[in-house]
Length: 110
View (cartoon, rainbow, N blue to C red):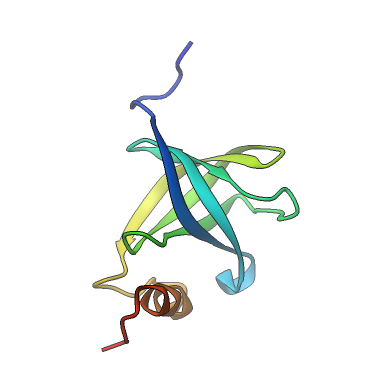
């Protein structure tokens, strides 16, 4: 039985997860499926994600504050809370997130 309010789409999107105090800790991960309300991440189970963290989409420069819904082995389900377009805006809790995006995309801070 499907419990999601919106359809899932298979994906293979490179992301960086920022977590911990001040969002200073990070880990690379992959979005394996995506919906309008959330995503399934593949991330090493070595990382202990908290209840809330930020996911930076390295492809399009968006950052999502998310809540962790579940985590089993190397998969984690998250719900999207807030979206930021890092091409235009800083993340309110970490300029370093936008700096990572700018560095990855070859852009510089204006």
